[in-house]
Length: 392
Image 1 (cartoon, rainbow, N blue to C red):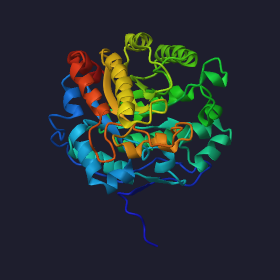
Image 2 (cartoon, rainbow, N blue to C red; image 1 turned 180 degrees about the vertical axis):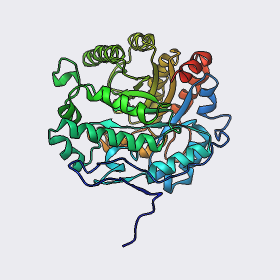
Image 3 (cartoon, one colour; image 1 turned 90 degrees about the vertical axis):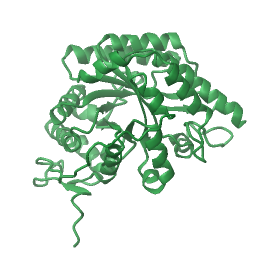
């Protein structure tokens, strides 16, 4: 039987146990190469962002990345920071017990390093993207076993990329006040197996594996205006205060920014929310920006204006805040947006969403121009942002 290339798959040492990830995770050495000269062009989004101490970047869809040199050229020219969209998630990296597949993540890391780009890690703990075998292990109702699984999964992924990742999304979408818990936490397999302390554990485990990486809580639905979003913001601030009071090593809060054309944007309330987070000493990242254009007209020009206007008003607000370090869109290329695959997000007229900065021909859209102007016109917070980056 042909054995897989160790650069593609890392075998987990130790005998098989109830969780199938027993023993220490020993990844085969996988050099990612030295950091190259910055690849971004002088007229791109990263160039405009970096002049204000910011980094602009994108999520990397591995299939498109591998198959389309035009996509790679845009990412190199426009971006100063990259994040994997799926290949660092648990179900992709460990679809079967006992073996971790780092191939897609390794390719992305090599590309970023070769282009002098920063990297984010996404995501270590999420209620989705759990392989079936891990779900079964968590359902076994063994807190000790669940903690071992969490420690070995975080250790395997974070240690492999230690020294290359600027910030890890340690926990992702952990809040759901609608689930009815007094603490606002979402009912998830991790919560059921370990209780609310799983969040603290995850941050501490990540810092043990990669002390130089910033620990980020990445959360959705906290940007726009609705009663239920107000409730989420209150719960977020309360949870952050608790994490800091307990000495949990959290460094940043990630705002996904999947903006909705169906909801208003109250810039005053958003600015107040950002300032409260910054006042806790935390940095802020915009991690998954795109614009759901369902409520905008079918006419392409009118729709693009609506998308660009909403994104510009959002960015004008968040870029006023010196604690904001990074702005990443969830891909750059319209045909790849996840919104078209989501039944809840599809346009009523069936037309594809125009959610991202580049169209089907890789042309810069009004959204690109709105983002570029927002970066260009933002206050210069380079000194404050440099202090926050150095704080980790």
